[in-house]
Length: 270
Image 1 (tube, rainbow, N blue to C red):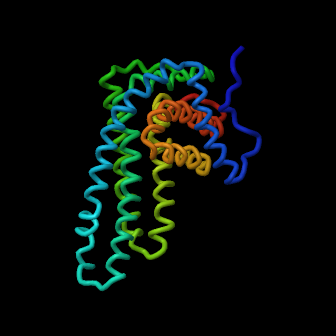
Image 2: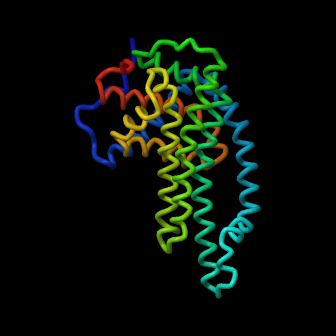
């Protein structure tokens, strides 16, 4: 018997909280693929582990040099009296962490998808076939697929950089910089992670990055529920390796739901 399509839209959308929780549920639903295709999911962990080692090394370097970076970014505070000098540098450190979270979480996902493209494309295709109404195979070469992935990743990276810069500047605002900015950083990370992870499903239907952003923004709370949960789990190195294959699976469901709710079909836009 064909499984029920979990991408089918509900008759009535839940509120913001309900949508956010729905997004979390979509991610954890992605772990079900471990039971149906454990070998493929294990293969999906390999590139996540390889890229994870590189990013852990980068985080260690950031931790070692953070104080130097903060001092360099705040030379105007050298002559300030305490506690003002320490306060502004603590604010700068928090802002630096927020920026690092936004950029590095997205970069980790993008790099992992590029390194493990053959594995993650198969995971995506498995989910599409299981749910039905799968888009036709693109038939493009491996090099063409790699070029598409690089172009997609660079396009989103160009969006993360100015956003991260704004967060860094906001980090210097008293109170807001130490409370609101970290939460905003997590939300921004979740948004860009959702955009990146849904790339397979949207690209296969001939939809652009702009289409992807517009579709996911219609239920932004659900998208953030999915993406922010991925971001939190990615912050734990071991969990990020386990989560990556499930995140690709869940992102496929997220993309299908957003498309089904918009046009009532999963066919590509003319």
